[in-house]
Image (cartoon, rainbow, N blue to C red; front, top):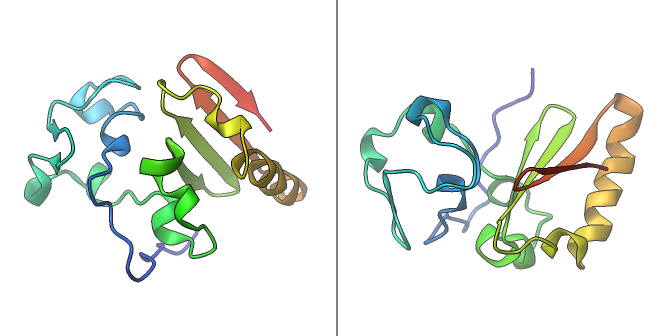
Length: 134
């Protein structure tokens, strides 16, 4: 079991709403890359105070990893990144298909993949229906 991550001091979601668009959320019957019906563009969740645990418990890697600088903020990188045990999942904004192949992202994603490999981990990148395993 992995410990629950904590938010890096000074970081917040701000106006970022990528987690309301990129992942599929079965609870809301929301497919990937479609806006959640509860999202207000540029503001956030309209049911924030009463949002379900699937949303309440989620924190992207930028929120929890102090080693990631502002370039990795989802609103800037156009990627939502999170860990699932030894796996790192990258969901790429459909409007920015090649952002993950540019720097500083591409080299870091490959470093994470190399580091995770001995433990059976990997980095997996999703853009629309395309899947890339690093």
